[in-house]
Length: 299
Ligand SMILES: Nc1ncnc2c1ncn2[C@@H]1O[C@H](COP(=O)(O)OP(=O)(O)OP(=O)(O)O)[C@@H](O)[C@H]1O
Image 1: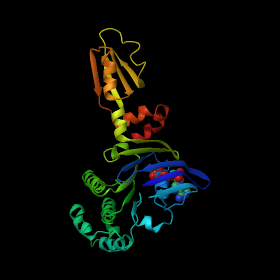
Image 2: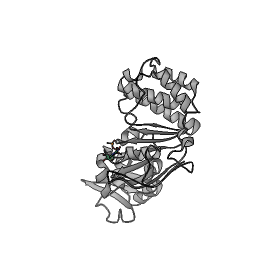
Image 3: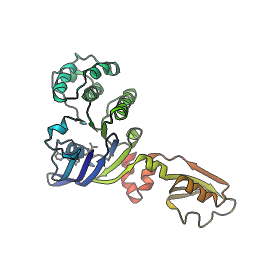
Image 4: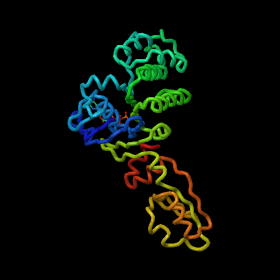
């Protein structure tokens, strides 16, 4: 659905994006992670056709995005800094959206009043920052976009509202295969939502992964033996990390769950546990040296 091919973008002769390529499948939720200044906003602006790339291509449904009205009608971008027309009420802004987006669903707009509970005759610029964010989701979801691009979308929302909005997003993905791209500098904030994660660092995509694959492929094991730890214990394993805690060895290995278990059981350990790994740990250990670079992004 979204195909980004070798995008380059400069500002003031400084390279901000250095050949970024990624793809997002229809009906999936892609989390774009990166520290401050990594280029996330620039990339999202380019994907949504606000910026024109210097080099490379952005395709949505095989069509170039820039100045493509047909595509833009199917896509909503909620930027990190919101903009609303001064003096407009929620209802007046909804009328504007209605004219802009052919998929506008009035019933949904009315139904979502229950969720957000904000008086629609209120002028948006007089609402609190968090309430303005709620309005941006309210209007965007009522426009029934095929693609929703979200730049740091949960800033300023309280935990209850975050949860409600995440539920609405997941519902749209499940029911009508909406595709979402969401940027954040905090993995924990988006890990329950995304099925794919990409990490952007200094204008380069360091890695792109399917979350289920990641979780099923990397394991933290705790082992102890009656006598010395066998020297060949990890020789045929993809070992990502190892630590000795007294007589207990803690290791992070990559491989199929059953094969990993069978391998270690062969050595007849007195203690053998497979412990849950957080996504954050997986990223750090998977990335090896680059893990240090992304550590700050993830915490
Ligand atoms: N319009 C612009 N003109 C000049 N430089 C810009 C412009 N927009 C972004 N930049 C520069 O591009 C770099 C990347 O900025 P960008 O906003 O894309 O990063 P980000 O990953 O979204 O960061 P943050 O998490 O802080 O929002 C920064 O160095 C920024 O100063």
